[in-house]
Length: 134
Image (cartoon, rainbow, N blue to C red):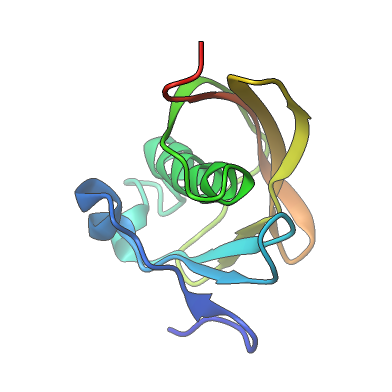
């Protein structure tokens, strides 16, 4: 199963994230869309994407967005709030366009809605720490 036209594979450097990928992206830093083709590794016994997989994809996509926002600075997740809205199944294309809603010297605030065929299935708001900043 492939990504839609225009998406390229995201270079994942975190060892854990490489187990759940590939993850794809399109667009320029600050306005990228990230995508994942859900496969049988990602679903639960009911055949829908596992909540932990959704949160892992969110952390990876938002981490890439935070990394772009800091010109490849070191960032870590401080907080992630999520809402599960609808099921998604194996074969679905899941995508998100993270939005930087606020930035301070030491913190980034990101949010995004995860969509399948334009319909929201998951929503996240997160706070990221820029390491080395008080």
